[in-house]
Image 1 (cartoon, rainbow, N blue to C red):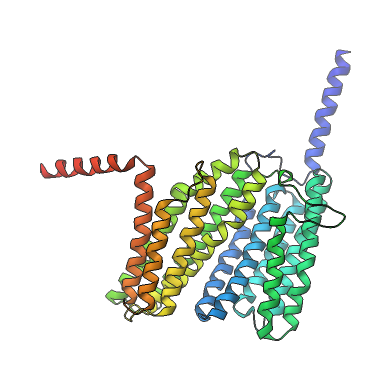
Image 2 (image 1 turned 180 degrees about the horizontal axis):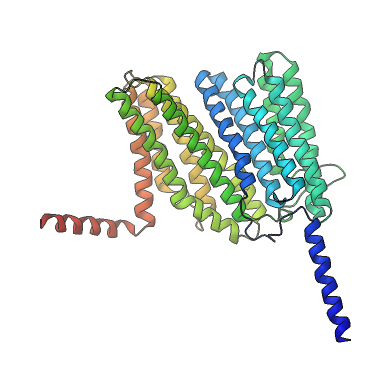
Length: 425
């Protein structure tokens, strides 16, 4: 009997190992799922895509250009975000998943190539690549999940149906004249973004439940943090490339330093407190799918978009450092700062046990609004706008650092003690 029991245990272990070898899914059980090198390789395309978006916006600084850039950004973000959800379940070490990711990478590269002319001669390439990417990945994932996680497989089928709802409007937009394209594509984007909010209701397939999304919260937090790095890195690339192609007058050197400090302070504001607290919050939350949808899928959009717009502001700062500030600089510098701080404040509020919007971020937002009004009225030079923008970020980051790393009294006591020590020498 003992031998039979041992034989049964051995057979069960062998069956489990065989199933594990056949599975295309990660076995994280809601715990940590490490980010793979293939996912980082995939993200390289989006470094290029974000750079293309910034160039598009820089070349189309009109209200129509802003609207077009917004639609393009929302499509790029959605392509990356849905792939991030997919790789939260799918194991990038398996051959089939690797082929899927590399195919998605190729389609994403075509999207990025088309971005500067996404509303003109390459509209067909952008729309076709995007629709094929979203539908192809979602249908493939429904087959991958069906064998082991049928609830999630049904979710993928619902998502595929919602992408089918939007696809005709992407394609109609390509066929219509250029001045009508924005309206059709905006309708497609609205349909796609309503999907997660409404939990993808589909006749005959029902509606998804937030409890179905049993993802690795730490993986989602890490992936979104890496995308913030991508966006900040794109700003560094634009700043460095613009500075390298120009003469190095003292004013342009100062503008370069201000642009760099702006990137540093945005990094500080996100990663000093927000990223870690958000990661802990999603990892410990019972409804990890709902947190991932609200805090990462949606609330990270204004953060990333703000960084992209501020990269355009940095380029204008380097190009026009000697000129008076104009309305376009006010719009990108202050609009980007407001978007970044409001998005980051809402993200931090989501992970705050008290549910409070950070007062420091509210003050910083008001500072950017005031700066934008002054710049719009022509009261400031370009360098002054850049310097005051950095000062606004410094106020927010300094306020938060002191508040969460020992309190104001301790910092004041440390400063007084340092001056007393210095006065002895």
